[in-house]
Length: 170
Image 1 (cartoon, one colour):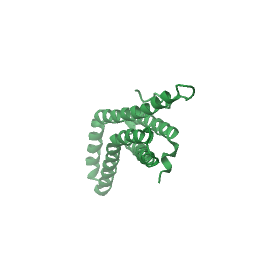
Image 2 (cartoon, rainbow, N blue to C red):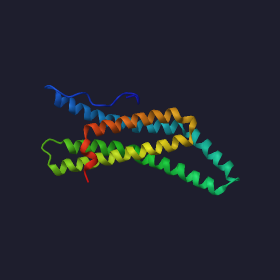
Image 3 (cartoon, one colour):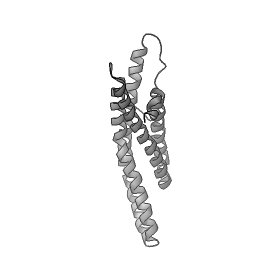
């Protein structure tokens, strides 16, 4: 699935509504899996840019070592957030969907499923913030980062449209 593809669920209605609903939810998990794959590709393709940034920091280290240390720590933290949430989003979202929609499931089971979906949404929020921070550090990679942001934001909006009560599970 390409990042520009809209993962929003189709309009429901008619006798096929149950199938469309299941298909839409399966599509959410698929879009989340695709995001994870795209992040892996981005880091492979951006490996040289990360190395170049490291060299830039080493050159600047001779000028102001304390600032460089802060810059390196900031980028390292940002990358760690992205890598941590890269797979977690898919795992939490797909497991949450399974729990929340399990036929004959209890209200407690649905709540646990919504809790997992909320965790996936929080991972999306944190990842969006991290991508925006990384975009500022790597202006040459803006287009590829924006593509990931669009993909992730569409996934987030579609998840909220399908599970609006996931944000209120506390």
